[in-house]
Length: 420
Image (cartoon, rainbow, N blue to C red; front, side, top):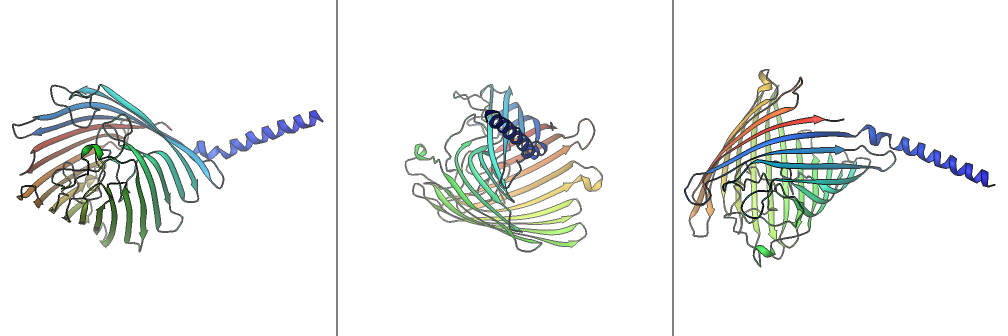
């Protein structure tokens, strides 16, 4: 009897291991990993004599991304990981503060920093739930990746595409690890210059450990997509965001894209947020050329509301330096892009744009004005031993009548190596 029980136990165990191996086959098969080396030089040259004359830093970063497949079954399970490490190559003599490196508390930057983010995930049909470290990009919130290391949030995110044409997106966040930070912390409301946004209790009360959002997009026709999101940074603000995107095919390699955005933001107890933000971007594309015209208008008692410390807001005129979202500000943008792939040089792209904003409600009752010019040229090697090696130069000039004028250059050399 004992031998029979033992045999059954061994058989059951062997079968369990076999089934486990089969069930996890897709978990391994669909896994992928890559390592990115990112070399970043940042220079902001302030054009007036007062204060810090420039921010200039140079750093090297490494990002290891790993994504598993899903176990087989009605509900599949998996895990993702993001390991980051950055170290200083050059900084000092009062030039810190670029956002590339973690501040050292004495006006300089730490020599190195890093982190490890893990994300558990589950998939049923076309619905995916992720819990842990998250990078998000939607109408409610956008994780920034415009420095040495990316911004990462901690929380849960459910994305469902089970209904054809419909994407549902739900999320809960409680902490953020910013681009120039080595640990997680509470989120805060952005009280940028001339926003008119204040928090009861001042900066010490400006923190929240709960941000929730719910929304999604629906493909109304083959050329028209509508989106809506509700979001709430607890105690700070509530926001309803609407988006309508239409792409009109005109002829072969020719189209007109219309991108309309509207957001209504109100306070949630501890702030004075009251803003209506309207934005429109129209882009005409012909072969490798794209010509865009943008308009953005702020109204209400404050400027646009969004999470501070480097979150990318969902605004058509949010660019390299400015957001053009101050109280009562009206701004325009003209943009030109060219993809050299259309003339036989794949991987080479160019962009330039000019923005101007005015009617800003300043505290002294004077109208604020600002303008910004950007240029971006990038090349990614498409084949050969140096495939995926990219070089990007970003240049910007900002001028205004209420703050610091700045000329800025960023040079980024990156290389992504697929591991498996």
